[in-house]
Amino acid sequence: RVINGAAKAVVRLVEATEPEKPEKMVGSGFLVADGRVITSAQIFLDPAATTTPTVDYRAVLADGRRVSITRLDENQNSGDSPVAIFRLADANNLPVLKLTSSTPMIGQTVVALGVAPGSQSGPAELNVSVGILSSFLSSGTSTAPFLMTNAVSSDNFGGPLLNTKGEVIGLNYKPGLALTANAILDAIASLLH
Image (cartoon, rainbow, N blue to C red; front, side):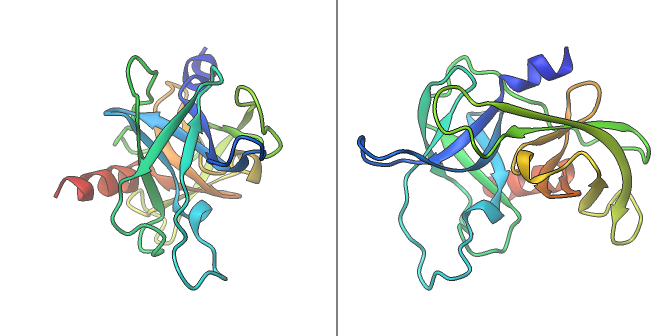
């Protein structure tokens, strides 16, 4: 039940290309309130690039629709923030996930969702991994910016990490690590100031 509801808010992010060229998948993301798409900023960093390329992106929704998205965070491609925030061009009547600021518990069951890297056309092919929250990275406190869990893999990179209520407790950042929901909320709040 948790997975079915949340799956509708997981998107595949692709580079917009010319009609005759296949889309290039860049990663997963998920829909939150106010027409925003949250994902990992690492997806958009190219360590070999000397300039920031101008690339248009689309979100492929669970029903297969492709919607243009615009990057909102001002530190785009700078590496300053681990979160990338986009706005959908058309966000009417879309399912969204709730970010929770409640403190996750070591040992709790978590669910990582994302789009498998090979899913290039049609609706997103969901990847689901269930695991446990094993620790908080760095100081060992719940204020650490990262959660360690066996649920996060390269197949769900950029997608949400959920608790058993279906609330977002993290952003699947890289294998074994998720950025906390509080860090995501902080990134969204910084856009409003």
